[in-house]
Length: 449
Image (cartoon, rainbow, N blue to C red; front, side, top):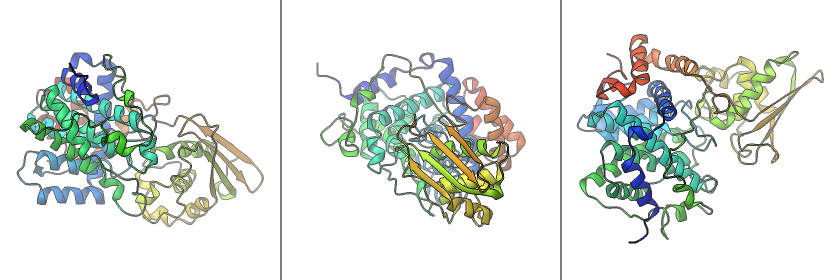
């Protein structure tokens, strides 16, 4: 019997994965992420980029099948996945993996919810699909990064298409053979570039095609379309095309064991690797003798993995501000917060923010323990120095946000869009997801009456 390819081995695992295989801890992680995703997607649906995505879906979507988040419109599965993924990535509050390389939920959760509603899947089926999709996405990232990211490919869409495909395939109850074909088609659609920083909405767009493509790959496989079973290791396959260095074994390590799903959450509305710097700033701000009017210099040391990113000192739009370390640190020092309200024109024009941003310097320090580690030294005009080092930011596995903190975040994002009562009902449905017989009950709550 011929040796199975990597995608065939993965397909066998995911075709057999059932609710009983998923640990209680993993089930809880999936539900925490669903709560976070829905809050972020609801708020993001009202942003400029989310609004355009919803308009596109409503005008060009076609036959109504499933619910758009934050909108009363109903559109086909692939189109809903597309628009909801953009909404959920529009305000820089979506989840992150432990290496801060990608976001699980925009591709995986957007694809899964669209298919789950159309299939009238149960809460238990959704939990399995979400777990499988996140696992698949992380396995691809581990096999391909850091080389993939360093070659200017955006990990969230490039690896996320495989996760979105597996999640959709589980909800369509595809066989291992058809999951293999779907993975081949997913690889054919893998895309996404890091040329996305600047005043445009480019970064927000990237997960949209990914979620749509994952649903498309699974639906095409369901209809009998076949895909390459060597999509990962082939001579012209994903790993050869997207990386200089890779680890194919990482794709299939521990396939006979329960997968530990590690998901981190964002308390601040900006790129995750900047959160360490914000936590440094908040620590310094709380130290005795700190006076924002006396700041003379701000020195940051970052690990070489991230030192060349997020250096823009003069962001012109909130999109740019959300990927600017100098701006984010300045606003945290001034306001003690870095939430949606701080990434606005008011703060872009604030003279103190501009002044603090200009005096922020960033250098590399390879001795820092983690890729996202950050050390800050702030000096005042009176000679007083303040310092802080953050290796694990708030929301990380080592410094987690509690369920209660996630609920506060969720309500702050969801309440203005759907109202307090519907937000409470939506959160209750998430926490009791395994009891839902039909996902339409949950999705019905994701827009105003």
